[in-house]
Length: 378
Image 1 (cartoon, rainbow, N blue to C red):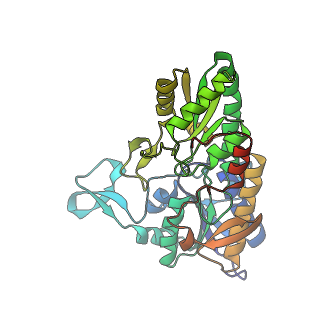
Image 2 (tube, one colour; image 1 turned 45 degrees about the horizontal axis):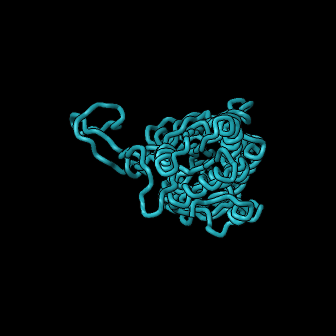
Image 3 (cartoon, rainbow, N blue to C red; image 1 turned 120 degrees about the horizontal axis):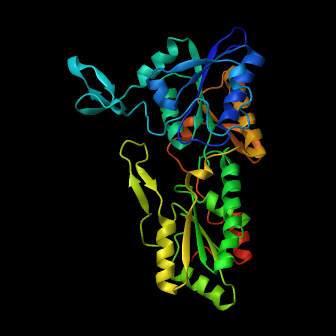
C-alpha cells in the first residue's frame, strides 16, 4: 500500500467477543484516517458479514467514545467460515445461507471468492482481521488468494500461537479474580469446598493467573491432567489441619488423568464443534463422593468476556490497531501483530494458523504456585 495516494482498508472482528475489540477498531480507523487519509470500511458480524456483503463505511465519529466499551460495534460471528459455509439449495439452482431457514438440502460451499469480490467492488485493498486461532486460520487462507491481511490477536484465552499475550486476557483474569475473591467469603462462612470453573478451552492461562491472583488452593488446567485421589487428599488434608474451606479454580478444558474433557455440547456448524463446560459440577460431585465434604461449583461463563476492558487491554489493543495500519502502509502483508519479549513485532499468518499456545509445564508461575503450596492435583 503506497503513501502516495489514498487507498481503502477494511476491518472486521471474528470469533467470540472480547474486551478491547472496540479499542482496536478505534485505533485502526483513527490512524488510517488521521495519519494516512485512508478510507476505512467496517465489516459487520465477522466473516458472516463478509460472506453476505454487509460492509459499511467507518468515519472518525463512528469510532469516537468506544475505547472503554466492551464487545464490538461491528458485531461478530464464531460460526462462519468462508471456506466451509453451509448453504441450502433453492429452486432454479440458487443458494441461500443455511441460517436463513429456507430451501431443502444443506451443502457446504467455498464462498471465499465471493468475499474477495465484495471487497473488490468497493476498491478495498487490504483487511485488518481481529480474532483468535479460527479467525487467523481463515485469514491465512484468504491471504493465499492475494488479499493483503494484517491480523490482530484477540482472545481472552491467551492461547494464540506467536504472541506472548493477547488483548482481552488481562480483563478476563481481572474478572475471574474478582469472582474468586468474592467466593472466598462464602466458602469460609459455610466451610465448603468451592470450585470456580473458568474459561480457556484447551489452555489453562486464565485458570493459572486468576488462581494464583485469587489465592486458590488448587488450580487444575488442561496441560496437567489431575488425579482425583490427589485432589481429594489435598482438601481432606487441609480440613484436618483446621482449614475449614478450600478454593479450587478449574479450567473448562481440565480433565482427570486417563479421562476425556467434559463436553457440554457439540455444535456441528462451528469450526471447533466442541463446546466445553461442566467440569466444575463434575468435580464437585467427585470430591463430595470421595471425601464427604460439602462442595459447590460456580461457573463464571461468559461474564469473563464482557464488561469494560482494563487499562492494560485498552493500551495493548490501541498499540495493536495502530501497528496493523503501519504495517499495511509500509507494504507488509499477511502477518499478525504480536508481542514478544515485551516488544511489538509481527509473525506470518501461516505460522499462526491451526496452532494453540498452551501453558508450559515448567512455566515460572507454576513453579511459584508450587513453592507456596498450591496443588495442581498431581
